[in-house]
Length: 386
Picture 1: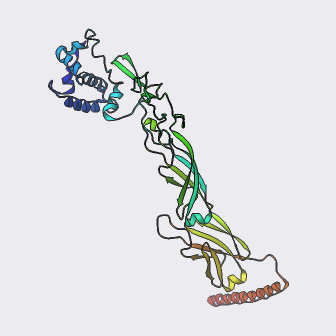
Picture 2: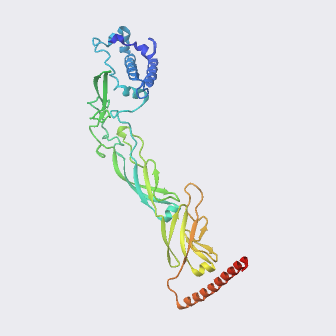
């Protein structure tokens, strides 16, 4: 069966005098072109196996010398068990990972991870959300152990090479298939893929490399922030696992909660100031006389009182804008407005004098209305020649 195989140099497309670099480059190009995940042609799997087998032999100086002398006959068991398939790799995916950096299976050695992210919530006041504030806060987290610098190893001691995997961090098990011999790779269950075993863990952190702390931070809350906004503090999360090669800490996400309205007292009334986008909305009451005759009101804002002129004949729901007294824009140097909306109030109780005055006013209104109605009726008769 071995004599039916193509020449390994022909498979890789190189000469018999090719250098190791030329063989490596040829393999990388062909393995990339024929990997079954990329090439969906029917013979891609067979070609990929053939390429792998050729490279397994030609990249090893001893195996290459034996192959140059005996050809495919060297794969016979008489020659020290032949070349033994792909003993240096864990199958197609392991070869592809070796040259192209792809992680595919759960059996790969774990890579260094950044520290975990944390989340905390804080509450601020209505005005603080609008004008900004520096907020002191405490966060329960971990920091690298000061005794062992995060290694988890007692100072003065060294970890030992894992006796189960010999320091590779991987366990390999060979098996035969219709394509030849393959090697399954899994993480060593004794050292968890680290290749070393800590016999004397740090007494301070008990080998974890981290100690619990309560860290004090000052959060700069920007002006105009909305309720539920999330602020990221880079590097203030959990520390990295240095025992596994981690170097970058996680981040801290602070969720800011702020009320969207505030109750204020104004001339004996209990009013509510609300955020509406970048504007502040305030409903204020007017009596009938103020609405009819007009008035000048002293309106409360978050920065003091401002005067608002109400013209005569103001109707219910009329809105007056006070420029620049609203909510700042987070990314622009400008602010929204204060919207003052008036509500004309009808009194529930009247004195005798007020009732008499209103009766006289009502009579005056009726005369005016009748006169206007009569005038309109006369104009209609004239138009029709009646």
